[in-house]
Length: 175
Image 1: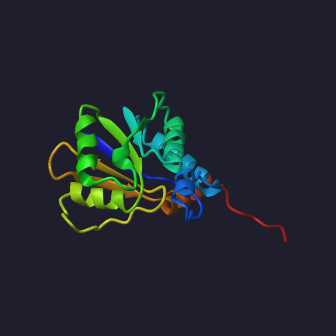
Image 2: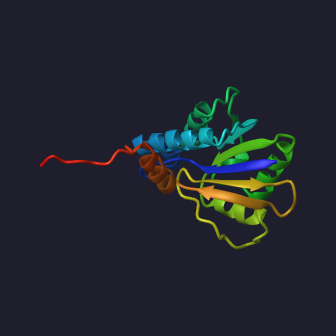
Image 3: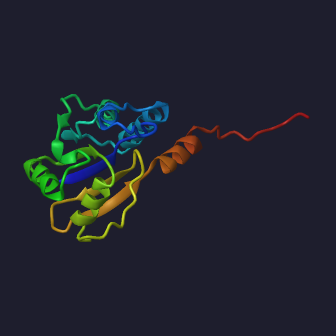
């Protein structure tokens, strides 16, 4: 199984009231991050078999926007194992349920995702990865421990996008 772990995109400032924070949507930057990530995944010709998301609004929006950009037509699976209060045991159980799929995208929150990534690659108890908002990592979970192939974050995607969209013609001036 190829596991793609995605942290939700930018959603503005955290709310003090937990009931309001659950409903916090993506902001303008977060929507742009999703679009850039979707374009990047399209350039890789990547198709997801299943997309699972935390039940929080910002994660569901991230999952649906990235899914739409990559041509995912099925419904996004809502999984409590990706919520901020989830444990590694529940995350591992979710992975076991999804193990018959080839390409799986999970969308969740930090610090859980960082801890889950570290545990999957065999770094028990040590968090060695920094997953920024709209950051994504690809792991091969066919063997234990998992192997991380790559990690990408919005800054890198933004620099790639701007370098590709610049004109290749030389600037000339008649001044």
